[in-house]
Image (cartoon, rainbow, N blue to C red; front, side, top):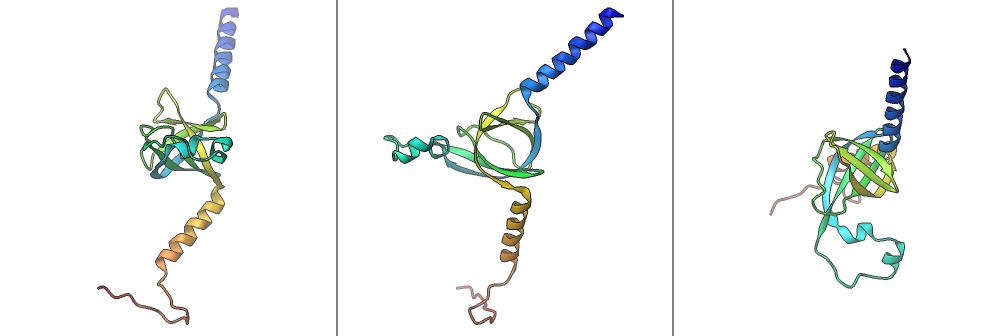
Length: 151
């Protein structure tokens, strides 16, 4: 009886230690990706205020829009090889002012800088407004519909 109880206590403590070490993951979907400048996404306030760096690199880094239940993140990778498939559901957690992302239950995490955060409800309103603007026909200043001609 005592060895069984001891084994249960050890397993429970290992699970708690593992959960504490890994953090609590949230789930989100990657809906957008574009390539941007690496240096501007990872330099601090003082580096930005001191002007451009002496040597400009041509390296580009991926920038993703990650949509979760409550918050939408725009995250930036550290290098050009940090790629996440679009429309992929990923697990993520906060880690020292960065987002640690785990793709497809991988054993390692990739760390991304957080560029922007917006509430999901506000993001949905903005997206709906953009779609409405794209779907509505263009109008002239006096309210008469304008037509486009092809040259």
